[in-house]
Length: 311
Image (cartoon, rainbow, N blue to C red):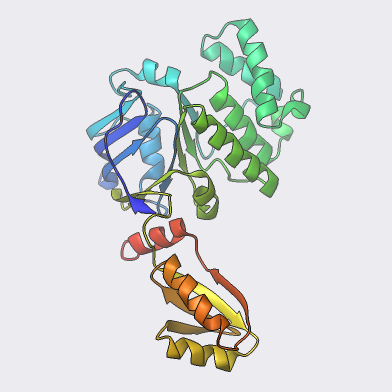
């Protein structure tokens, strides 16, 4: 991951030094970020970092106390109707009309967006297929599982063909297959030019789907990084070998910073090049290395480093 920031033109999300408090509680202190069309931008941070509050402001549901926000060039404060036309909003927890069927829920959403009836019906079938809910279209919403309701929430967000998606923990409650399908769906939407801003605590999955990561903590932007692996990131690698004593000796001879991890050994390395060089050295040591892998992905490592003193 490498640092990257810059202006965005022709669409996307721009947040500039936004502040929002609830009485004496400051939820968002100074957050700035850019989410570009054609990219998936990950918003990550510990609980209480201000992620959901920021997303509520992007969705026109809260007004910032200070700073500015634009979505496709429109302000959620000054032009909320224009912003709502352009965004697909999926909150972490949302209610639904339990007495309606899945299909009826989407038809109701289409009416709320003033979509023509024929377009709503056709689009409903499209998004149900996209989120793999077509076989549940006539089932009442109240009998859906948590994961199925999440997929219905995604269908609701996609129904009116938004140019910008704002997703708060969209993978919550999804089984492994559904998470993979969500990742592929978001990558496909981004490839078609959609701006995607997604918040999640599942950093390994964000690593696979995101182009950019914005790390926030205590209501402030700490770091913005591109997920390209261009810059070295210090990570811990776990190593196991048939001959542990010889492994420890080889690590000492290499001057490696290692720590005991039970039957394995953890080694802190500055980057992938150093990891490759150490592996080559261990392979010739006679220790019989059987496993050699990082404990954290690059996004996880960057997040842990950036928030180390801010928990």
